[in-house]
Length: 111
Image (cartoon, rainbow, N blue to C red; front, side, top):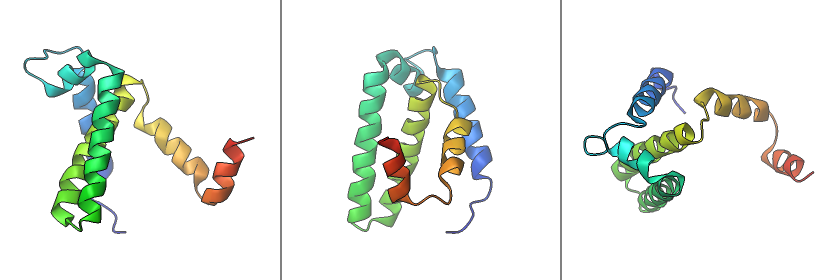
């Protein structure tokens, strides 16, 4: 996988924008409208975008997969903001798992 240029800054900027829209005017911001509808709606939208991403990928629709992936990431970041989870917390968890087999990591959760 190629290293993407400045992906961290793009994510950080998007997180800042999402944070700034929380509590904003619903008539002017889709993000503000999502927040006003609550966690259940945000989670529902995330699930819808995940399904749309899978459908595009299974259909070998490269451009569709890219577009739907962008939607999926955006809605995931909205969910994190709603849950007061930072990208750094998720990265810490990913780093913790680095070098651990998926089978071993899953087994450790069941203890």
